Length: 538
Image (cartoon, rainbow, N blue to C red; front, side, top):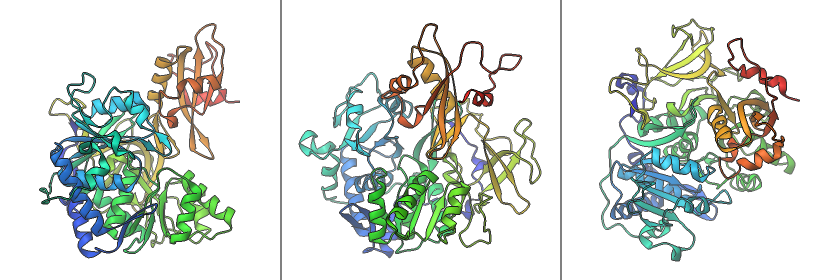
């Protein structure tokens, strides 16, 4: 594992959850608010007392089934109360949870299971109205049960299934059946810290598994709740996926604040609006496309949004729209390697405009360096954003290291490959990526990954270049420029169809543009000038 330096985890005295665990947090909240509603999932309502009890029952059952502290367990499940209980049970046992993107295709799932050396997987039959089970079963693994010596998955031992029909799965591997088994005694509560592995698309073709500490997640969740002003009794619309740091921060933040966490499997906007209005949900976080669709739904109904507290991705138009409702959105600078948040604005601060992404969290140090020389630059000068502190991830799993090499530089700062500036007042201003990355609908897409896929998997594609193009709906749209093999006929719709089922939908280019041989924009040395590709757009 290629790690960040130990000295990079500085400022721990500023983390209110330093060296504490999610399991301890839930026990503390249950002691304070045992009868307060913790989770609402459709007709299911759970108090914090219910959540703690089910967590212990599930943890005891998983322990009996062979799950142990330090195991890597992948979670490929719908967003539901069952998933929330499962996450808490696994953290209680000291398991390293590897959440997998439910929109991935079978080859992407397989790669993640192997790369993260997963020993057990929890998988749902359906998520967001689409089958995960069909994709999973193509991997040649049992639909629930023990795995014995699979040549493709040498580390995998167990498959647990979130399945509506218990007769299709043995009880020992049927998730809902595990919840119903009373624990004779509470299993030991683990104090292990490195308990989350999130796949993040880097600037290279292969996503990497970033390992995070749970006290870092809890600390950033705490500061987000403080910035938004979330308190016990608030009602939190949870729209973030559990396979992203942001979705997990929403869940943990709602819990530690004593707020009610409303769950939805996928984005059914009319259902979310119905729930928000009926329950008077007053807190929401989300990416701009999601929030705009929700606001459009309220407007179409002639309904005043019940939202009082909101965090948004840094989009000025969405900020201004929310401000039109009298809201003070919290802006942020976030990335997976920072346990989600590095900087936040404050809803009660004197900043009345969305230009900055806020100040670094207490104990988090941010500097801007020249991206070529690595030398610090003065305030107001753009460069690469670098940071260190208690929220910094611990490293990339299964990335080789010589034992001396670290992911952080000589000053123990992590280089983000993001552009930005620091103001004289200490506020951070995000300026975009200088690594080849596209942000589309809240998902990160590696240009290199999609390019490699197109050239490897589509026989008619001889050369490909992928960029992000500004888009009103998605923020950025994935657009592919392709040169076809001699004699092939260009058909953009057919190229899109050829991608389906092989790569996650959000990675599939929204548009294909044909580039004729010899017309690629290149330097004198032959290097592709990617940003000149927009000259080919109609």
